[in-house]
Image (cartoon, rainbow, N blue to C red; front, side, top):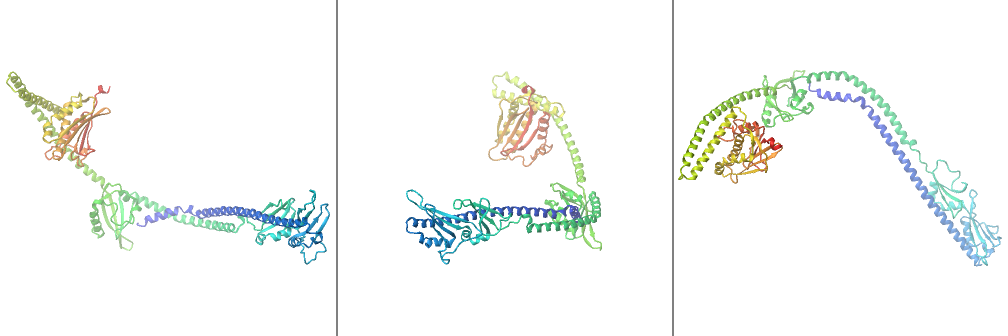
Length: 639
C-alpha cells in the first residue's frame, strides 16, 4: 500500500510518453534551422566583406598606377625641358640618361617629333647598344603612351615627345606580391578586350570582381580585380552535410524510440487500469487511512484522510512529527500521544483527538491504531483508521446549548412575570404619592407664609411621581406585548430629559455630559418614554464605566440624520468594551458589573428593535466605548 503514490507518478509519466519521443527530433530540426540561418547570414557577410575589400584594393591600386604614370610624365617633361633649352641634340638623344632609364623601367620607345611632324629622333634604334637598354616588350599586352608638347616659335607648337610603355610591365612593377596572390588583375578597354593581365585566361563566371576607371591617366581603360577566393554557397558547406546526416540518424533513432515507447505504454496499460480501480476504491471510503513507519514518518494517506485536514496526499507523505495538522496550542499533548502510539500503547478501542484543518478550523477525529505487518510477519509500521466525528460533536454541543436555552427562556419568563407583578404593585403606591402630593400643594398653596422653595420641591416631586407612573405603565405594556405609543417627537428633547434624570449621579462621579445634536433634526416616530429609558440606561452604563477612571471623565451624546433614520450615539472615554462583542453584551443575564442583573442592554435592544431600529456597540475611535441606536424619521418630515 505505501508505494502507491510513487506508482501513480510513474503512471502519469508513462501516459505522456507517446508525445515525448518526437521532442528530440523537433529540437534537432530547430537546431539545424538555426545553423542554416547562421550559415546563410555568414555567407552574406563574407560576400559583403569580399566586395568591400575588392573596392578598397581596386581604388588603392588605381591610385598607385596613376601616381606612377604621373611620375613618368614628369620625367618626360624634364626631358622636354632640356630639348627646349637646346641643350640636347638629336645625336645624343638616344644616349640621354632619362631616355635610357625610362627604357630600363617599362618604356618601349621614345620618339621626338618636330614641329612639322618629322621624327627628329627615335629610341630604340640599331645605334643603341643592347647592353645599355633593356627592352620592356610584352607580347601578351598592349602598349600605352605618354606625351608632352614642346614649345615652338611664334605661338606654334614646337613638336612633341612621345613615350610608349608596356602595360604588362607596368602591372608587374606596381602590383604588390600579396595583392597579385589575392587577385587576378587586368587592364581592359571599353569592349572588354584585355590590355594587360597578371594571369593567363579569361575571368571565371563564379569570381567576384570589380572595375575602376583609369581615366585620365589611361583613357578608355579600366582596372579590374577578380578575387581568387571562392565563397562556397552555404547549402554546399561541410556543416550542412553533417547536419543533414545528423537529422537522418536522429529520425531513425526517433522512429525506433517511438516503437519502443508504444510497446512500454501497452505493457503498462493493464497496470494503470488496476491502479485506477484501486485508487477509486480507496478514495470512495468514508474512513481516513494513514500508514506510518517505525520512526513515525507518514508513508501513505488516502484522499479521505487528506481532505480531513485540507492537504493533498503528496504534501503529507514523508513528513515527520510535528505534523502540520496538529493544533498549535496542543503540540505537547499531541507529541506525547504520538510517542505513546509508537510504543504500541495506543488504546485498542481507539482514542479521540483534535486536528486542525488547513483553513484553521478544528476537526474532531476518532483514531484506531493497529500494527502494519509485511509478508514475512515483521512489523514495519503502524496503520490507522480515522473517523471524522466533528459533526457528531457539533450535534452534542447543539443539544447542550438547546437545554441551556430552554433553561434561559424559563428564567426570562419568570423575570417577565416578576416585572409585570412589580409594575402592577408599584402603580398604586405611585398613584397615591401623586394624589397626596397634589393635595399638599393645594393646601399649602393657600398659605402665604410657606417658603416658595418648598412649593417648588413639592411640584418637582409630583412631576417625578407622575413620570415614574408613566414609566411603570409603559414597561408593563411592553412586558404584556402591547404596542408602544409611537408619536412624532423631537429626539433632542428626549435626550435632554433622560440626561436630566441622571444629573445627581453624574455630578457625584464628576462626569461631564456634552449633548451634540445636528441642527434642524427631523422628528422621529417613537414612544418618548421608552426611548428616554434607553438613553438613561446607556448614559448610566457609561457613567458607571467612568466612575473608577482617573483624570477627565467625559460622555458625548449626539444625534444626526442618516437617510430615513436618526442615529443617536453615546460615546465615553472610558476603558472600552474590553474585547466583548455586541452580541455578548446584549445577551440577557450578561453583565460586566458585579451587582448587575444583565437585563438593561437586553431590554434596550428589545425597545429599539420594537421601533424598527438597531442597537449596536463598538470601540470609540479615540478610545472608550460607543453605543448607538437608530430610529425612523416621521413620514411628515420626509415629505
